[in-house]
Image 1 (cartoon, rainbow, N blue to C red):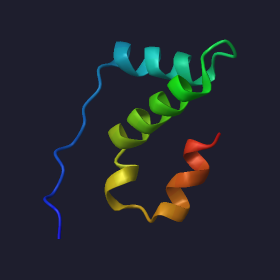
Image 2 (cartoon, rainbow, N blue to C red):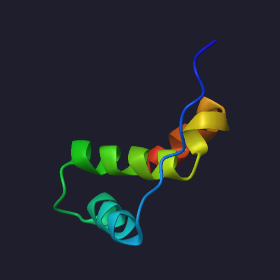
Image 3 (spheres, helix red, strand yellow):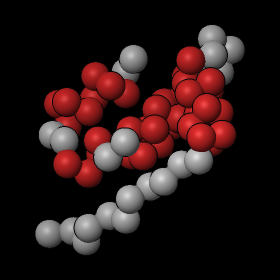
Length: 60
């Protein structure tokens, strides 16, 4: 069993920048995916949700 993860807390400014990166058409796919992963982690999705529920969120 792995160690419990500390919650990831983002400021409003950090969250806005990540959302912009995730949605901008000129952002590389790799960078957009990373932004969505960080946003999901900040929302707590990566700690408690089954992978099948997290994957569609990341592929948006």
